Length: 125
Image (cartoon, rainbow, N blue to C red; front, side, top):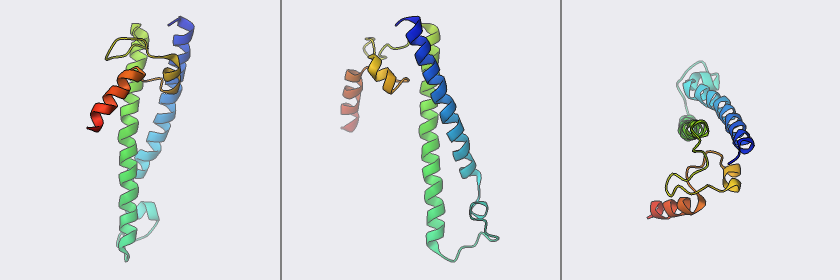
């Protein structure tokens, strides 16, 4: 991969990282809020069980998103290190080049499309 293309992917990865970090801060704020803070109520006592369920559901979704975003952030950091090391764009499983269209869609992709399909096939079993 030429330097111009690598620079393009480096910038794409940095933008994606910044976007995720901004979203992560917002989700972390949701997780930190207590039920009282989130609803603006003076008491944490609820008269309806659905209110408690709704709060729990929102926090579970936020926690899930935080986990997913953290995993993607780690992959982005790994991809940025690979750019610095000169190994970006190579499949971690078969060492073949990952296609440019795949990297444009998922710039932190670790595997070529064939290996990714194979891994997903085995994962479903």
